[in-house]
Length: 397
Image (cartoon, rainbow, N blue to C red; front, side):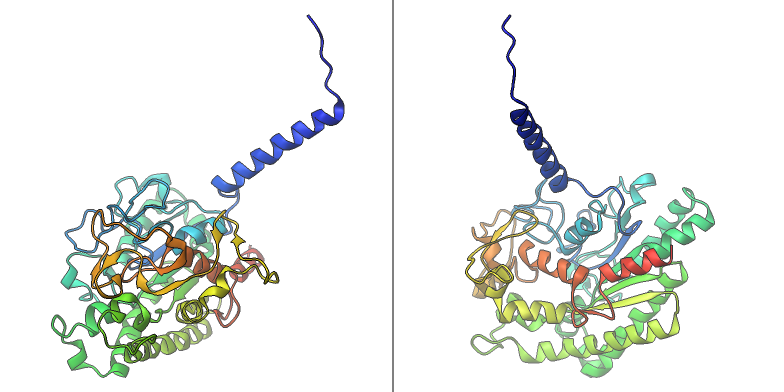
């Protein structure tokens, strides 16, 4: 047998290459060993739903193609071509994809890293979304958490549970349906006859506050409360023909702003009245509005204006948004008069679109919104971002 000797420098190069490949594979497919929060619990609507409506008697479902066309595993009940804001935020926090509360496997140890209770068509008000069938309203989602809480009590003692809840993150994304599937649907609801826009915003905030305080009384201390995006700019509203060319539906955005202003004031009030807790206002309206007004800016590498493409941390090659006023999947005016139906053929260049369907952003937008929630400026996350909440968590350890 001939013995072959490999020069040492070559061995080192081979070992280095193997290590690099292993590191890249691990970092791209796994979460970090120690999550930034012990768990994340999510309440909301279709923006963050990950499958809770799949088995409900509801028109608000997305567990069919082409939804999930870019998601590993295909259609799951996410109202997107790929990942939701919560999926991206979980990756930033070192948490796995959260199980949907309604999934039969969401029991025992599977709830320890958090649960997603969000339900498409759900609103702050119980009656919101009833025109689309069954859904879990905010009050029902809070009750569903109490069911999870009973499971958690069986897995840890009271002191451990108290610390676990206090250090976990609650994310709530709600309010859109209270307008587009309630106040703006006078043929189904009487709310626009009974309440002025200001009074309706007050009604929503009062109901919202009660549920937030209930969650606080159950032990949560870290809250990220996302406001409502510019609904007057979504394809569904543009397809009504009420917007001037290249503009949004002004009065719809004005309605939303009334709620958002009150939500920010509520955050100040909650932080003042509940020392030891942190309540954060997420400025979804401002973040999405900035994308719509300056779409190409989100495709440039910061400080490298000569670069046409930006390869982000998830491997996407992205050159900015070129389509801001119509859906990637749908039919009719703005591809939004009929939303994305089973086996519809969506656009090919999905990362160029702000909106996936008549109502929901694409995966590319969700990634941006998640990063803004995690590390955004004070104007994007008030009074602090989620990364700063982590520092507070560490200080209280």
